[in-house]
Length: 114
Length: 112
Image 1 (cartoon, rainbow over the protein chains, first blue to last red):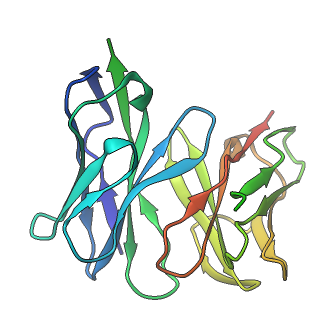
Image 2 (cartoon, chains in turn brown, green; image 1 turned 180 degrees about the vertical axis):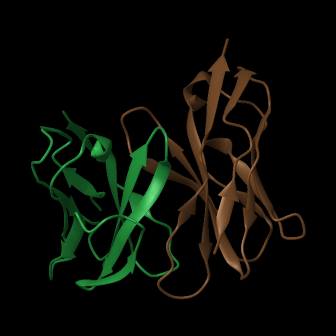
Image 3 (cartoon, rainbow over the protein chains, first blue to last red; image 1 turned 120 degrees about the vertical axis):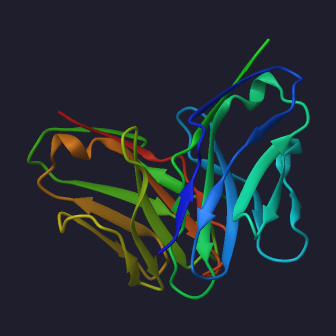
């Protein structure tokens, strides 16, 4: 079985400051990793994904994440946040192979203020 | 391409009733998954359909069921509604097994 831990339920940050949202996962097999963002009253939008190759992955809206296999982490970063980045962020893991469901973390609420 | 479309956006039902939610995946996507999102439990996997067959199922009671049609559209049904079924129900589609999920905007179900 796989699991995802997002230790921070809320992260307050000032506009133009850097931010890191933490994600750790647990799995007995190889995984694919994803970050999704959810704005109020909307579904989830894919920010970025790690399937293979370079461990540093760049996504939309200036976000990036680094896959660290030894630490089983996939932290999300942005060097300078904007008010519009205020949203809920979900980390998710998918075991490689067939018929596998996506498992989500509990989410991190990023609150950007002036 | 059009995104994942879920209808209706909002539903209000009373306890004991049943409800059917609809999902149209992105054109060409044969896999459709359903998730329940609540403040207390977060995102929980309900089931996944691929080419009209249920391929994976989460830990929900039998009151929750689904199906997929030959055009890949999917429906989810909840019978004998309970107050705890109030949630945002999200549908997602993907091209292949290991492709990212693309989500719709969800159906907000309120049970009174």
